Length: 425
Image (cartoon, rainbow, N blue to C red; front, side):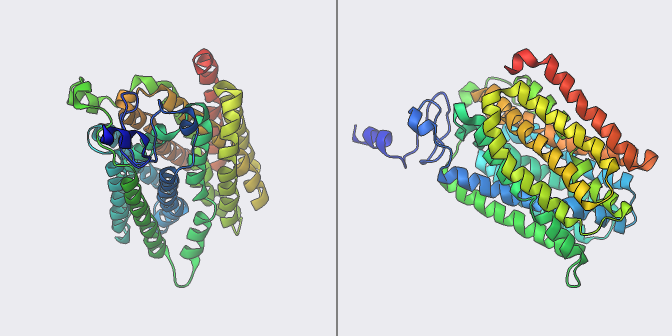
């Protein structure tokens, strides 16, 4: 009896409920606990989760301008840049089902830590100066990226209060976006510095992701997560779980996310090559502007999306992105690029927060990690498909037609939103 009372009233005792069967130590709480506790967003563990994600995305932010410039330095064309970006997306997509299955059966935090370590290890291949090894490194990094985000999105789903999922997703997204405020500009500075170069940029990226792994390890001490569901509740054959790339419960959010982020490489990677073509200097400030926009807009617009609803949020998101993509071909200076980038990433902020909240709402608790792993496939799939597609469009028709083509594909998100309007309510 005494041990039961200690378990019930001590905030540092492990707890478990059938509704949300994850073992905690005072950080991530069950959705069936008291409303006062359920409404809390900022716990120590949530802060550690956001910090680990920030460091993982910081590594990615350093590499966004570095990879395109490094590949062209090695003699590759924009089409080859697209292939290298696609290798990241392909292996990230292929690895998601097994990593989601592993997180459900073993440990969510363990999968996240291993994902961060794998990204650091993969970057060591970039020191071999061949396009082929760079492609292999980025592909292996995609597997690590998959593990990091499978764990992180599952932990977010556990922690987000039901009535404030858009806001919690916004804070989570802001932590990711904060990495893009200065680090791409820092990467460009390191590349051009006398003491720097491409290898120095890769070393910085490796250091950031290793610190992220350390933060995730501290997080694992805060939340000792076992399997997300009892073994008896997992009635589906293991091999069917692994080969099921998409969980149907999150198919609509995944499709929306794919269209929302399909054009992201146009405003994050290819734009640095376009800026050099038209003679825009000091382009690192562009990344400062878009990073600041994303960081500030995501929590604010995430809260707005909770109030106005999913459908209206997505209309705003796809409209802003389409307009921004159409503006870029008319850009002739740094200020114009900043304006287009700010519009695009404002749309990305409100759309990304709302779509992630929608996926969390749709994910069944008994297979949450697998469902959110399926949903998160949309991000590397859109990144890889966009990089490959737009790289070849640049080779064939140039940057102007690439941005016009990207705008037309982005506008198709409005069509999908209209078709799914009833379900989005």
